[in-house]
Length: 280
Image (cartoon, rainbow, N blue to C red; front, side, top):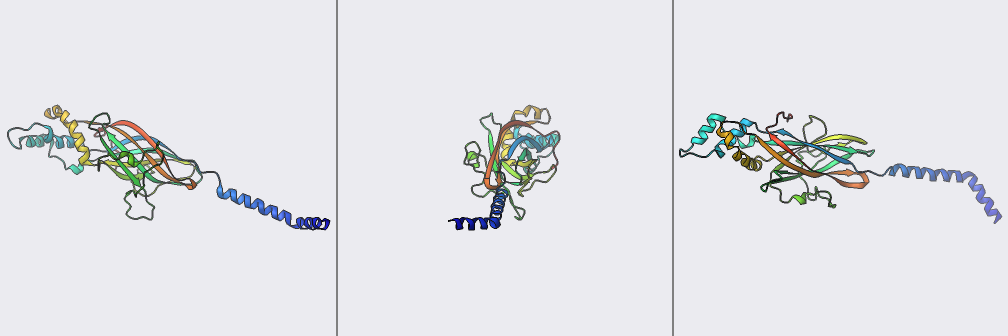
């Protein structure tokens, strides 16, 4: 027994220090690999800014023949409207677009990609004839040519009840809300390329959306009818659109996987046309 102890001690003189160092190095490497636990990003909704709309002259020319009562003489109203406001513009030119602006903070020591974005907008939320539009964007890697942002099955869905999913807006009108892309820099053209929120930083994220002309103009027609007196007095008409917006943003956050952060609902009004529009 004594000989065994002495042999063990002799071995330790040359080997125990090495074994202890190996154990310490293994523990340090494990700590470096795991690092601090990933944290959830935050999304702070800022505002919804009108960036494109038809002019007052375009709106008057477009709606005048539709809302001014017809006379016994065929075509007389259309001719009068054209003489006063000019010919009606093409429907495709009556675009209304807005930017959703967020501040996204990434508290992690690694960049995180924005994977998906859900936006749902209700116009005239306090009226019974309100119109709802919703759209889901799925962003693509830089090596994905021709990406359109079309979502795959399961995109913009959440298992938690406090985060809205695309399934919550099944009653949304088709083509009322159309996504145009996302950007991280002021003046940057929106794209569907997957944006990266850099490590330990807060960035401004802007997502652009357009209302489908056909669907929105049906809503604005009701306002135009109420503005008949202005048209009769040969005055341009002004449209004020109340709205409510909500949705969610999905990120890929390391070992946490795919996580969602909700925003809204937020309300406000847009006045068409805007006094000063942001460049397209």
